[in-house]
Length: 462
Image 1 (cartoon, rainbow, N blue to C red):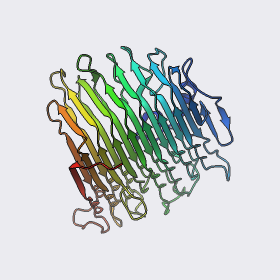
Image 2 (spheres, rainbow, N blue to C red; image 1 turned 45 degrees about the vertical axis):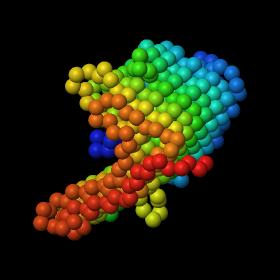
Image 3 (cartoon, rainbow, N blue to C red; image 1 turned 60 degrees about the vertical axis):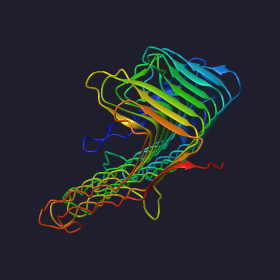
Image 4 (cartoon, rainbow, N blue to C red; image 1 turned 135 degrees about the vertical axis):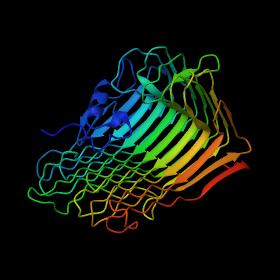
């Protein structure tokens, strides 16, 4: 029987809800009593809770979720590929007030749209996540003092399935991870978190939009000797677009949200999948575009190490995997390239306030009012002699544009107003200190960074 989690040499996927086999549990528990939904259940090639398309009319509701997953491959010839997740669309004019006490395996959004590709089996390729579209014009509120079912007011995620971490088909390559497709969120309503909500380890977010490439699967070596197999490539992640003209309030100056994890009024993230064991190349993150014309106010009290932002937009290449069989270099890290653009842009024509106070003694706080980052993935370590470490991925271009109608303010220690970074990934380690980068036994080349621009006082044209 195949294990249900990736071995210790390969870390879990970067989004807890979407680890292998847990989405089925999330589907089973996703819809609380009286939540808006359409008939779910299994369709050809995928299963959904809430159906892939929700059109929510004006009215009052506790939540609305559309959560879908493509079927995983099966261990038979010609059936090993995972199926694509369907495109998921949520269009809502409703108002939501979520304060339920129901327990859920993994918190989701009060309004949620998720599509995940099915996992591959053996050398089978994983399925792609579907395109995600969320448009909300109503008000969404989350209030409470107990651990909530929700960690976001709006959650939108497309995640590729993962290649098989326990490939038992002798002498085969690893299966490729699936693609995280485009994610688009448009909000014009008021989004509010209030009360002394404890923070789940996944963090707390107003708008939480992510595209995630799936991890590549593991290779399987010949029984008697090493061959020339490779781990599967990690899946790329596509474009994440967030447009907000509404008002986002996370906490207040009188009642701050308490956190030991991460938090942001707007979080937009595109992350490539890691390469499969061993020597798999990683996928890269795509374009991230955030346009903010409303208000975003965040009030935090930190009781341990935490990272908080007003707006956080980032694109990250996955990490290549080490090579141990001396037939290949370490896997290359994902990053900006001629075939896949990694780019991050944040346009601010509204107001952003990040306020941190009353934190515990010794608590470490990191963050910024607006942060934008593009990061290349690390190359995998090289084998013992004839090959090098993998190359690091290139960091893409980054821009923050603050228009004349916009403002960004922070209150608290070590919190810059604007922070932008492009960072190339590290080359994979070599095993011979006498060798140069790129030579057998040497390390891999590090990735280049790209242009970083911060512009202020711009005239806004829609």
